Amino acid sequence: MYKTLLTELDKGMMTITINRPDKMNALNKDVIAELGQAMDDVYTNAEVKTVIITGAGEKSFVAGADISEFLSLDAAGGAALAKIGQDSVFNKIENCPKPVVAAVNGFSLGGGCELAMACHFRVAATNAKFGQPEVNLGLIPGYGGTQRLTQLVGKGKAMELMMTADMIGAEEAKTLGLVNHVVAPEELINKAKEILLKIQTKAPVAVAQVIACVNDAAKCNAHGFDNEIERFGACFTTEDMKEGTGAFLEKRKPVFKGK
Ligand code: COA
Image (cartoon, rainbow, N blue to C red; front, side):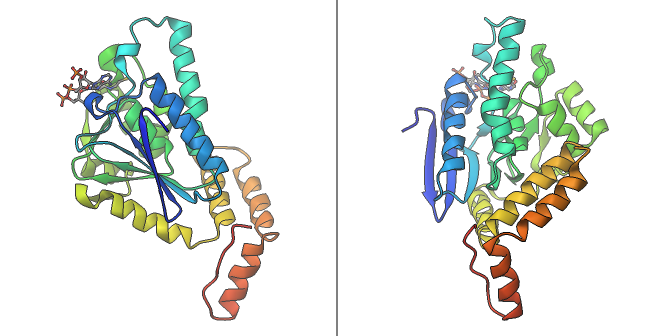
């Protein structure tokens, strides 16, 4: 179905694998277009409950935007590349009402680090390496990296990482709060699935509201507290809230319908 992606749906979990291992899974125009389509499918396909994004092969998650597409660009072309990517992929992932986790298996550089950061959280293999090396190319991050790295690791460390272009390993990324878990490469997908299976037992509408509220906080939305009040109230109109509270009082496990 896709030229540059592999997709698999298993127990409600959609795994999207970027599949250009000979080019370290670099994000060319085709990958960006197909990731946008895959995310549209995630939004609309009721069978998809949660999502894992990963890279093909053992060396790389994604080693950045495809540098070979940069040479012909001028200011407007560069800005358009960044805007199309942000609108059609990165923001769509971040704002997705279904949980999206990055399973980072190797190099996660430039647009790869930005892709991982657009996901709701990250699980990394011990061989994962993170960095924003754009200044080596005379560039800056363009897929949201200056914003999301600062949100995740704080201003000082974000400044240092983006100005030095240093690569950091999985354990350091965990210490900085860039990744939540570090596991052996062969355990990576299982770890992501284990967490997502747990989330799939929770009330889906409430999970979607958590995503929206936390995104407000990350973006310093001045209305974050008011939005939380409104979304908290909205939860009371769901069947799942009646089921969850009813199940607690009846001392049984809830069965949520996502309604
Ligand atoms: N864009 C386009 N092609 C890329 C790429 C990228 N971001 N990253 C890797 N590739 C290609 C290489 O050109 C090479 O292609 P070739 O076999 O046709 O020559 C292939 O992927 C393998 O990469 P190679 O550099 O030989 O592997 P390596 O193990 O020596 O190094 C990296 C791996 C990730 C350290 C190195 O490829 C790299 O620094 N990539 C660029 C990272 C970057 O600057 N990203 C930010 C872009 S904005």
